[in-house]
Structure formats: C-alpha cells, structure tokens
Amino acid sequence: MHSENLVKMLNNISAFFQADPDRPVAIQGVVEHVRKNWEPRMRRQIIAHFQAGGEGLSELSRAAVQVLADEEVSLTARCV
Image (cartoon, rainbow, N blue to C red):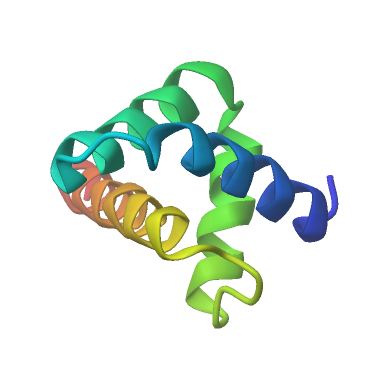
C-alpha cells in the first residue's frame, strides 16, 4: 500500500479520536485501533514513513506512530 494511503487512513482514525479531551486516551485509542486492524506490514510501513519525516501526518497520528515505533524497538530488543 502506498504511504499516502496509509497517512490518509491514519489521519482519519486520528480525527475520530481527536474528540477525546484526554490526549493520552486519544493516542491510545489510535494505537489500539492500528494494532487490532492493520496488518504488520502496514504498521511497519507507517512507522518507516514517520521515521523518514512523517510528511502529512497529523499531530495525533504522529504521537500514535511514535508509540508504535517505540513498541517495535522494545520488541526487537527482547528478541535479541
């Protein structure tokens, strides 16, 4: 899938959770949605896009992808 499509999808998900006044809850909502509904390949691709500058990602999307990226690093470290 093209990164532009993933960015658009993630920004739409984030727009839904943006209404939550509790920012950590909103971030966790986006993270949980992506974990449950996106296949690992899509998650890796959006993390790579974020790490390359994250063009087009909303602020909430960036925060959620940062959490996902941190989890990937943690999982990788445990497997070594």
